[in-house]
Length: 335
Image (cartoon, rainbow, N blue to C red; front, side):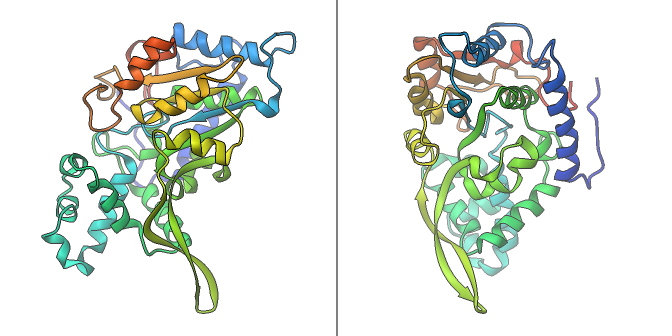
């Protein structure tokens, strides 16, 4: 079936309206609150878990104030292939900034960034961070917020030509709505930059900015034309990945989650931390097995590598979502 298309001027607001309708459909479908999920082990794990923790007569009942669900973003809530969306944003910004930095043409990793050589950027441990810093630093927080919103309104996934906000996973959009309908707090806990995700998370996921936890840079306070401003520096404050994720959860949420959803080794410690809690817990990994509707990848991928976490899931009995078999629909409006 052909994909639905919208005019090139499509904006986040239009996408948000469409997805809001999908949110509502998921909520009101009493017969099937998760219609994009095929019947199977993963769907049963979700619904059985929710019934257990929300039924006041159940021994596993958890009061609403303690119902915390945390979600990784890249590869869990939306596509991370063929490149991280924030990296795509950084590469576009490097092109804009290049005339002011002629030295970048001969210096790595900036030379690779200007050539959009993603493989080269991901091949060296510090290349990605250097590109992020060069493209994101010395902007006020207001300027950065505006730049992200403007970019998201026009940027397109290079493989599908669709807005990045169309590349969210419909089954996960339904899951977010289903959990909130049962009085769960839904949080994003991402390795991506918190200031990159916050400008659009409410419109796309229904998650307000104060419930987004991500990597941060150090900020500098300045008076510019007698107005107080916060300026992003070129130094990381906290990298919210791997072991950093449970630390950030404790710092920002203050409760161990009941449910956790990830897709890569960067989520392993967050999965372990959640699963180790007492009482009912749901630890779920999105496994990119499709290969037709989107790339299939896991153990050897430079983006979203799923190796140690997959072994841990099999060893500990965590739920592993097989996208190819268990997701009837991948993206909103795309069968």
